[in-house]
Image (cartoon, rainbow over all chains, first blue to last red; front, top):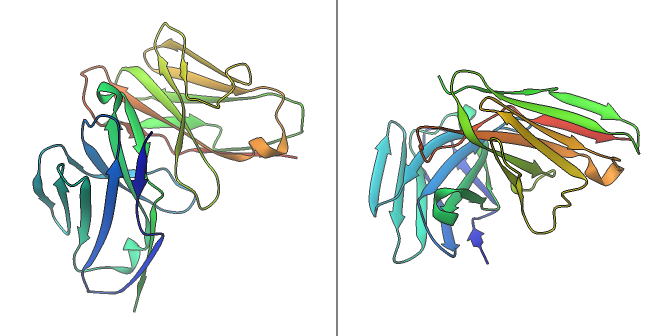
Length: 110
Length: 116
């Protein structure tokens, strides 16, 4: 089966840095996505990792270690608008199936 | 680019009736579309994978006779919830993947279904 775990909730301060972890155990692996989702809206793409290492894109970075089944999303210079749910999703099934983690609800406070 | 639309954005129906939700890729062709369901404070759960011109592949536990999927063209897939019940009330989200074979899925804005 597929098992993807994330912390349920996190709280951080505006301007700070926060790291959201994701661990996975899946049958097959074709890459890992991070999405941001505001309440009542569809997920929006943040990052994609298929090789080990760090991918940086502006204030957002994502890291992957395939041997450890581990990824994290790093958000820098937090803004109030970053308050949202962050979803880790693993691509399996030969690249056809996206399995989502439980999601981490991030709250950014003043 | 890579815009996916859904219609309607929200719908309220009575128990026992059927509801059709449309998913369209507006500026690209999608050989594969995916249908997800999301209950409050939960993550997205894949219901089925829809391939243009062929039958959909349903995930375990999803009733294919209750959730009818049609992917008649490269830009349109529909999900029909038949004989809806209150427990079918949920947020239904579709996504589409470009024929170019990219890994990324582009998500629609979702449809909020409430069954009374």
